[in-house]
Every structure is written in structure tokens, then in C-alpha cells.
Image: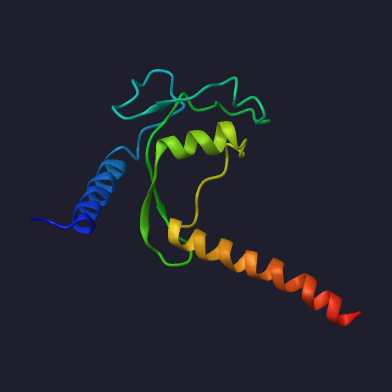
Length: 124
């Protein structure tokens, strides 16, 4: 019997392997059939992007190498769709931190936001 942690690690490794296998697919090419697991893009939701380049037809899982720790992680197609279409992120951006480093960075910024008003008040 395997533990939940081991199962999660195996699933993460297989998802990473699949993402590497589909890394060379151009999601903007109109002649390519979306691979299994692709999430179709909604061009009406991407209208906020001011670009002359073609918009993606679909999203596929992408491999991201974290800038801080160097860990390889998958940026799932569902999260890409959320980032580009719901959060209205720029279509030319992509994830650069893994989830754990992103959480640490968020905690660091939150702590700085709490400390700054107290420091400003003390200096007056």
C-alpha cells in the first residue's frame, strides 16, 4: 500500500512528463488539433490583450522552472485559462515561481505591509 504523499508525487511526475511531451505544440496554430487535456480558449475573454500576434486557441499544461528554487513544476491549462481570461493577465506573461515559492513571496509581502504602517507611525 502506498501513502498519499507517494501517490501525489507519482501523479506530479507523470503530469510533468506529459507536459514536457507536449511542450513543442504551438497553441496558436489553426491547423493543429488540440491534444487530449487541452482547455479551449475564449477569444471574447482575451479581448483585453492589445497585441498583433495571434491569440491561443487552447491551453495545454506548461513546464515552469522556478526562478528562486529551480524546481520544475507544471502550470496547468485550467490555471492558465483563469490567469489570462478571468484575472485578465497579459497574454505575453507566464508563471515564473513554483507554488511554494509564490506562497513564501506572498507571506513576505504581507508581513512587509503589516510592518510598514507601524514604522511610519513611529517615525512621526
